[in-house]
Length: 563
Image (cartoon, rainbow, N blue to C red):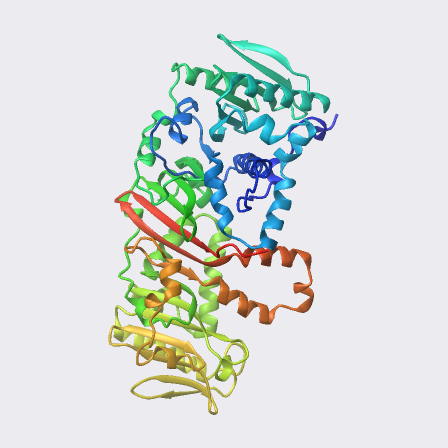
């Protein structure tokens, strides 16, 4: 008998769909259906993160009281209809149609149909404030998947479990009632010999579904306090104590440090970076969706070093994509240390060094990084003059030098390399002309690029005639622009730098270059309809304490468009 006949639908195929507007209870059911299915998907994939909420009667902290402390990966969903309905203030008719189609095809939606169940009638009446899914090691080769939900009505949640088992029985499952120290549960073999299908109602307060009996028994032990829960661990308690700008998270996640380290290091045992836990929280603020991701470090040496962010004032408000930060030399060294022993990753770094040397004649580690210990910014800036008239934008690179003499020598060496170019990255016939104000690369009267140094010690290299927007200073600096202020609302002002993208401008430029056949593709239309709901994205990082680093991300969404 094939697995597809009675094992649960493959959760990895469930797309994350959380932005459609629930106009009625049945439609809200589809949203929560997608939420549960997404929980399964992320649980099985192992790529989930969590953050905090307050320790009150309800919430994640309460339901974590019965979760075994061995849980390594946990994802919790808020089931409050009112919170999810707030998403309805954003989007376009096209984006809502795309998301609704994905929700309708989610594994839980299909399961409810197979069991002839309706979310509004069979799930919502008993569902509590959180649904939780977790990966729990049990000594098997793969961790067990566990789903727990609070119930407000034992009779109705028991009826749901009965219908759930009946739906799987029709597909070939064979459930039998079991007992473990006073707790009853139902168990069926699965087509996968390493897993089972196990369901239980726990004292009329929770329902649980698991992939083996052992993890269900661990839940029973935790519930009756004969085994420590995740909520009682120091890492969990520290995580939930952190402040948050998200009043009521929609999704929260927790990742044990050992698992988190496997995601960022090819050799966790040898890695110099030690992580106690990674936690995350996703919720709404007035401008859109906010994500807070905290890394709980075992060493303060790995934490974020704040950037003065003076470089931002040197950028014009026409910059629509910016990556800024501090101390490229330290970042490069950290990456090199992190990938040590990973031959593929080491090869990538070697290729980066070779490419820089081939095109610039400069040794990255000897001639560039030693003076790149200050601030930096890489930006795309809109322009419609000179060589940028066709593209509509150009590149600007801003580097703060900590050693003017060394940086000057490196840049003069670059000028010589460019002047000798016979084609390729730099056009043949390029001349380098110097003046007290700037160094200009040009072919005839056409300016290819220019470079100047500010009084603050920043080297500014720009394509085409972009220098006009930077010197003597931007007429409208980026931090003062309405777009930047909107897209970075409530992000930490003291931070390690920014990623900033004004999506509306970027999409307008992208539209000019995409071939007609790409635009005619249905998939492009679906993707574009979702991207059109995003005004912009901003990301930054900050140190909450000496051992807690936070990544903040804000998706600024456009208000709902009329039908």
